[in-house]
Length: 511
Image 1 (cartoon, rainbow, N blue to C red):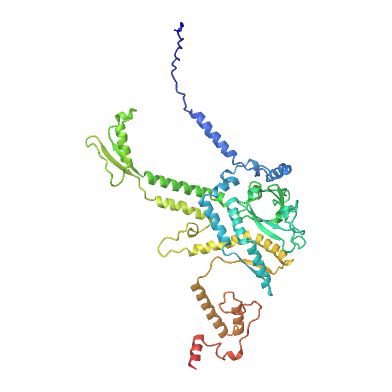
Image 2 (tube, one colour):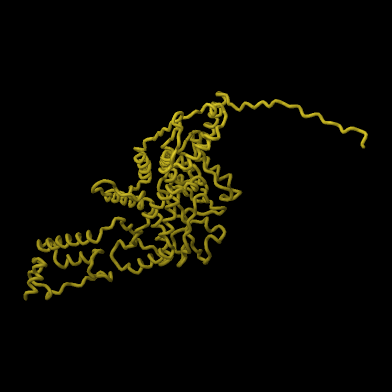
């Protein structure tokens, strides 16, 4: 046996654990809240937009950002914009995933391009072949879909941009020739040769950043209008881009918004947030509008001792609670009570919060929410007509300039010249029904008959007017050569111009 006794270690002393005081003094809590407010205010300071890494070439990044900073004169840098400052493309891109913002943007873009345009000649002459060629080129480039996507970006980010890929006079794509995209795309056949348009490409605004621009003289045409853009390290001249900005901001804010506009997403953020909170609160109230109260002896439970029998009893009742469930009570010591929260008015509050989205989107209820007007004999036709008028006005303001420039480039690519007589018009969204068109034709026929009878116009002039009407159902001058087949004198009776057509046909049948 080992002669020495094993050393015994003394047990560790028992130290009374003193729980750490986690309470926050009221003064410290106020300081923390003030600090949070300061952080939120600092994040809303007006400051120039800074592009992601790689958008501006390394050697020109400092210069570009400095130019943007110069565009905030006087005390503009010290202003606070609060919720109205530019929130950044990352935030806007995340909001584009939510259905409320997306439906607004898609509805606007779809209606702006749904009926599309009609290319036409403003003067008389044979332009039918040119018009057909331009329309075919618009279909080949898929211009309608490209414009729709750019208009969606305008609502999501405040700016939509299309890049026109053309071939150089030597036959290479401009984007593959060093320095070519930085040159101006003149409307000249020497710059835009035949069959030179390759495609259109949609570019999100986060990949664009303005180059130097004029901030000194408002009398010059390039005041706060960058002529050069940086696109992921490449320089692109503004003439090669088609820009869509439906909500421009004042000049002093343009550098903050990366020379874009105010997006519909940011404009509708407060309304959408209010709707989402109302929707969530209503859902929570529906889940907890009814409260069951059991009046029993809670002495031991309130002292910290868990009455397992009572807890199991409550869990069992909560799990099996329905119209067929039964809750047994002690007749002498227990009592069951029920408290229900009134749900009247919740539907109205929810509907009101939802309809506020239509106000900021400038879309009628039946368009955005797919809900017609409520009430007896209610109709949404007036709202739809007003909405279509707004869409047409926006088309003229936002789409006409880029469409006109694109059609001019297409003419140079197809014909080698620009014909000023060729123009386009937006097809109206509002279309008459078949019955309404029939009623209009009948009314026009009566008007022409009265005009002929009174001698205001002749039958030949009325026929020419009818042939010039695009909605004419008769095959009159459908070849577009401007020649109207004259009415043979032998086919006309002396009294046919003054006789009712129905009475004339009856008399012919009798003869």
